[in-house]
Amino acid sequence: AKERGRGCYEVFDITMRDRAVAMLHLETDLRKAIINQEFQLHYQPIVALHNNQITGFEALVRWQHPDKGLIPPIEFIGVAEETGLILPLGIWVLQEACTQMRAWHEEFPSDPPLSVSVNVSGKQFAQVDLVDKIRQILVETSFDPHCLKLEITESTIVEDLASAKAKLIQLQELGIQVSIDDFGTGYSSLSYLSRFPINFLKIDRSFIQDIDTSSERLEIIRAIVSLADSLKIDVVAEGVETASQLAQLCSLQPTSGQEHFAQGYLFSKPLNRDAAKSLIASGRDC
Ligand code: C2E
Ligand code: CA
Ligand code: CA
Ligand code: CA
Image (cartoon, rainbow, N blue to C red; front, side, top):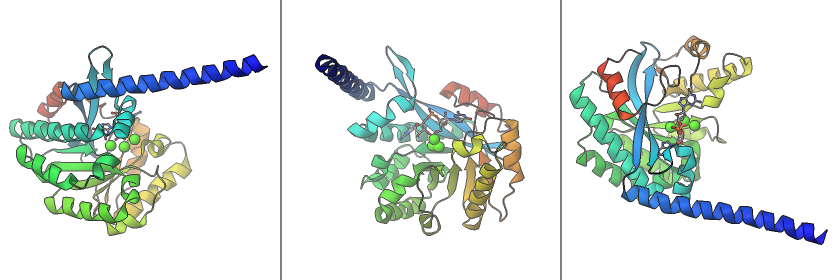
């Protein structure tokens, strides 16, 4: 029994050690990746439901690892957050998204111009110089702030209500719009919605998934939509995969002049730069 006990501990220790070693490797690789610029952005269209036109794209980071190929963000954003590497990575993402969309604006002018949405992590948003950094990037890339949207989660706001409010006001003064990402998943404190300048709620995919099979889900979404409408916040449905989900969404008409948008595989998966460019070149109808 004693031996088995010790054996168990050893197995446990080895697993722990392996994990720690893997994390260290990942961190070392991530540091190199930032220096060697191994990241790229993919772009997923966001579609306005009233006319089926693409209004903009969400920029989603991928890591082109020299040995392992294209790595999705779920495998490295967490470690990037823990190690602080999300800060230089986040700056790169903003610079790249603004530079790319600025180039597309020049090449394919449209009215209104396409927007680009960039995910901002909690740690990044908490930086005291966040707004200064963004202002600097907008100047360097000569990108129109009205075409930049930042996506933050509820927990980012709730963790530091006072300074979050000040930052959101500063961002709004610059003309930047803000979306609450993954809305409905966190434990939400709805009160900030009416007090803070927020432009979009992105309803999490988990709610959209069974909108067409669960009447409870549909009622939750109906409630979110009506709340957003009354606060003059636009709604984006995330992860729309089927025509039937879209039909249910379309049945929830906005009541007070708010706009409804959708994003998901039904319209398009996230596209690499060349594929996104081809899509833009072919027009905005989705
Ligand atoms: P997110 O911000 O909620 O992004 C949406 C995710 O859902 C993306 O995964 C997208 O590919 C996926 N998606 C879109 N439509 C559908 C659909 O119809 N069905 C399904 N099953 N999935 C769909 P992705 O690109 O793997 O990104 C995962 C998460 O990584 C993002 O979730 C975001 O939290 C984070 N992330 C991505 N890029 C960045 C970044 O530049 N900075 C930061 N801080 N986080 C990022
Ligand atoms: Ca997002
Ligand atoms: Ca999301
Ligand atoms: Ca999500």
